[in-house]
Image (cartoon, rainbow, N blue to C red):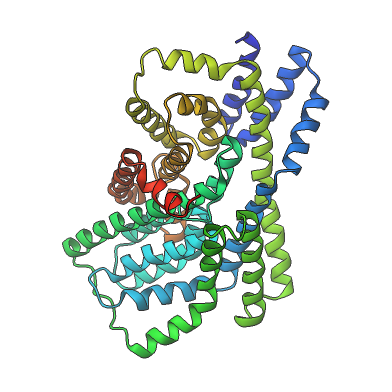
Length: 428
């Protein structure tokens, strides 16, 4: 490694301190690095952008973003919530279970934690507050259940991880199924315990007529995750093709069946999706330049030689990586972990013989837990804002749920089959 390596890291640190997008720091640092070393900037950037234009799987990201935005904008989330409530029925803390189940269903359409928290979360929090649940608890369980979004397929972070690591996106998406269900089960146990302790209300009795009506209204929307799951897991569609079909299907049901979307709203949806994808595209492009610098400076080899000197087993490595990422998640957003740390530690993953699919799902879950950890967890701010509570109340109530999420992380890290089971069954 040469002293030139200080340049991109200095720019990244500066962007972090100034609270600028990390991508700005990565791109700015790369440009200065290339100038300092006398390398051709134009040739490299042309090659990088060309490779991104040819990246077929990259197209899946805006398609899933559009699907999530359309679901939130067309009152489809109301129908999903009512269906989940009809399914749960009359139980202690019923709306807490409904919150988790609705998030799991919505996860099969969006692939985004923030889309879940800011869209479906509004309905969940308001309904729980109306029924007598403490507002901080309602916000905390909403934030925690939103973590399921990027784990259960389709998952935008898993797609990005696949692009960075070269892992099969199809396998990564399949690998997220069982971990997402584990998360939901553990959170349901927590809701049961808290509901009994605090004597939260029993859910309203659901008549058969209400169940049928709610199911019928939600049925068109519920076909969206079915299309995605069947298409991806049978191999009939690639993740990108499944995303295209899901986006088209969502558009059809919003315009024709539910009739909750007009062309003015559609234009707004397209613009908001393009704006969100623009930020992701810029970040992925910045990551490509950063990975190139890491490669030519042989940072990965230096880290490999250093770590292999005192880490002797895959178990110790996984423990260390999870601790590092959990601490990192308390102070930074997902961009640092995904686009800076992951490229540097991938050689270690291969060196210790860890399955890349297992590692990908585990590391994405770890970074999603970071969204719920103080002081900078984005889900804390979003759900506290939606629920109109102070951040300190949200943090106090969310800490036990962070513990629940970490238990799920430990189970998934310790038992790779929780991730690999579905991919083996499907023979992919």
